[in-house]
Figure 1: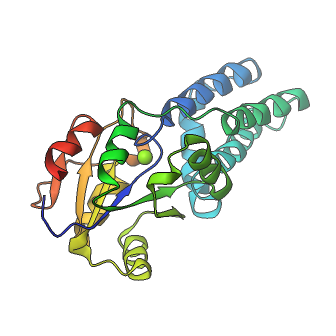
Figure 2 (figure 1 turned 90 degrees about the vertical axis):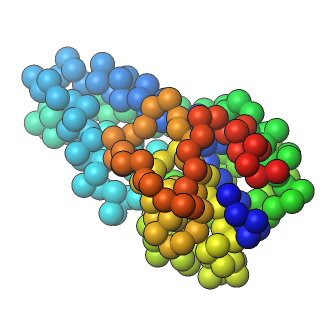
Length: 229
Ligand SMILES: [Mg+2]
């Protein structure tokens, strides 16, 4: 990693705290709930496709996911969805939104070590209110100078943040679990990226591991301290 880096941005979901595992659990609960009312065997696939179709209008996060569950259920039960099942689907979404934040091992020690020498920020997708709730509950806010909740993580979204925050690409390092969202677009704008994998990755976030001079892959978030200090 280069000496030029001044700002380190952390992805939030599955980088600072657990997230994807709750979506997988919710999918399973959803499947169990509507299975008795449909002959469809591909409930989870249909949900995934509905989510993808809805991403441009709902964006990322639990609220859009909940609406996609309802839409999938209506579709797969040919409109015969009992009202109490709709209610239970909404409850799955609400329980996700009420879930306590579970930090990933080593996160706090990494932030504590780095915040003295670098300007730290959060760069995350998702629902504004939910991400703000998690940042607050995580009690990590003391380490961050800025929290950016983005509607997407493409090259232009990163360019915009760097411009607004007055950061040159070579001064910026993004750390996250998604190659597609946290690594590739960041490398494409000549900034730096570190990939820290999470145990599971949403199908939509899969991508090839890049070969790039500004890229580093580590196994655990604490390994960042070996290169950044
Ligand atoms: Mg993530």
